[in-house]
Image 1 (tube, rainbow, N blue to C red):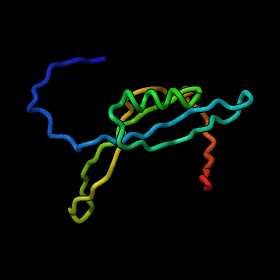
Image 2 (cartoon, rainbow, N blue to C red; image 1 turned 60 degrees about the vertical axis):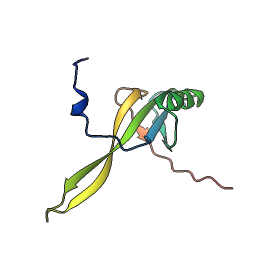
Image 3 (cartoon, helix red, strand yellow; image 1 turned 30 degrees about the horizontal axis):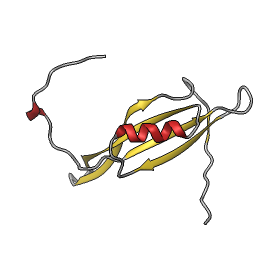
Image 4 (cartoon, rainbow, N blue to C red; image 1 turned 120 degrees about the vertical axis):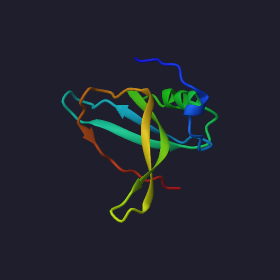
Length: 109
């Protein structure tokens, strides 16, 4: 871990309320099986601690929490294109190099 003092002028501003992506990792029922990954987007949380608390209450083997941030890149014509990226701020994967089984589900109601 590196720690360094910075000037407040080094920041370029805030985007307002943060949005988070939570990845819930669940172990396979048998050894050698694929890990299940359940992904959630969380908006309007008071802070990252609230998101961590929610993730811990889900009962998964482990979780990852990432904050979403906006960036600008330029296309081949030089036009700006806005996009989003995620940076992990808490948690860890269930395994170093898990095999992931992707299952999509839709709430009915």
